[in-house]
Image 1 (tube, rainbow, N blue to C red):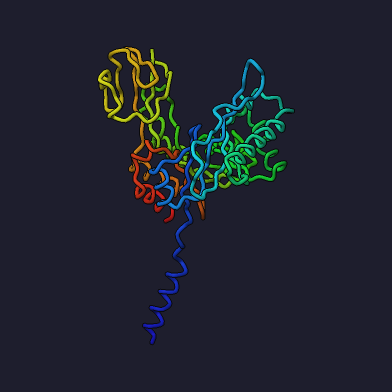
Image 2 (image 1 turned 180 degrees about the horizontal axis):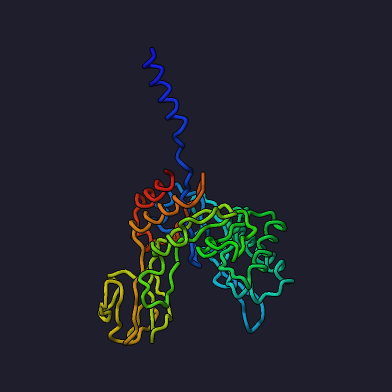
Length: 339
């Protein structure tokens, strides 16, 4: 009887001390101007049980000639049927817009953004959004205006407002400020210097990520996490970056690419590469991420981010990007964060 009681007590203690898996939902960004889901993209949404997508509605940039903020790259719809998803409008706002826009016009910009989104969502026959995400790499010069914009959208339009948070903003909140949003989404990518000749991968560098994520005090805003699935080619001419070429595959390289290293190539003859004209002497660095790097990155996140539930947002929902990662790969990443 005594031994039975001891075993029962140990079992109860183990049950009480073990914590349940954390809730981690997979969502995606959709970052193209024409919204259309193909069979592969729909397959990923179904298998991963994705319930919502952050859809780029348009960009906002400062027009120096007209001296005002203007919408660019507005979203259009390519087909009329979509799976039952929540479509969250996302608006990319350039930092220079927030710097140049007079403070007294901030609220008017917020109202214009909402009118345009509500009209688009109505035309698309999508449910009126209850959430909006703003994507802006704010600075010390722009943060007052940007934070005012967030605050206005939340209060005037009764919305949940999410904002992107870059790694430097996450690590140094006293310097960059903390936006008055409902939550942030930590962008764990695009962390390197494109112009650095020694940079091997500006999209995702584990050493750089660790410098930003390790031993950082708890961020004052609830955070979700965004991870990269994309790749690109960094095109340099006379030592300066002039273009980013999305999703360059090995099979797409022309015979005029001479390998300098595993990731660097020299253009040996001027020619068109898609719609872009490459000149002899140009250099191209191919940057991509792999599943091993993503798993190591989420282990860093798990060890340094405090959360009970989490949205794991992949950038982005695109056939070319998805071909490099299986649905099981993405489930494995999700499982690491659930532990």
